[in-house]
Length: 269
Image (tube, rainbow, N blue to C red; front, top):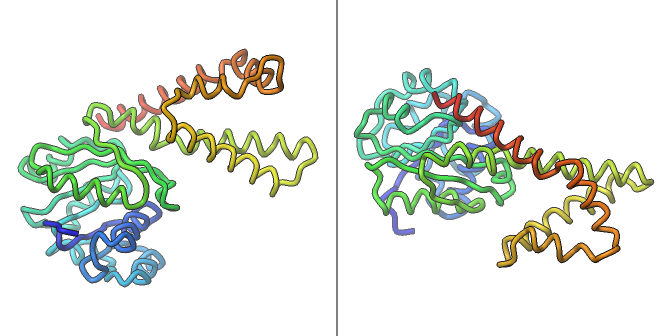
């Protein structure tokens, strides 16, 4: 990869940080020897070392010569982390996946001249099919942004958005897997309740959701029309859809997303 980013550091090697680290190395973004990680957990460090990455317990040791610093810790740990890191190279791009932390907040810690990219990924990144929303401040060049998008695309898809939309990114894709898991769980329970084994019900439910999602992505047809196409007049599907409509299924989803968005906005204040 022709890149200006030669060395990277991932601070926080839990589920999401670990997925990002794996994407960088396994996806061929950077060689393992050009990447460092940091985490207080020995188990997390050992996973990173399994990829050939040098891993440290102190963040300061990982960032000293990094061109790219990815912050993948809990949002409430930001102030403590900044103190621990100390000085970051002026030319480095700082990528934050800290939920609710605005670019202006990060600039307050790292300086208004700092190159800041804010990302909201989601947990399916752990299996290579994540979805990330990405925005930047004016100090990040187009080429640098392209490289960051490439990193987050290495374990799924990435969409560049305005920062004003990051709360709704959180509501749709950041938290969205939880809503989908609830739907799948409901289908599984329905299968079990009607005499099916849990294993078979899980396969039927999860593969159906996966297939429906693939159809939405592969087609120019709207989800509404795809739904209509499944509903034969007088058939079985339309009876189920009627119940969902009567119970306010779509309105409930809208309300859930709005609650998530509002919480994200509060966290950002």
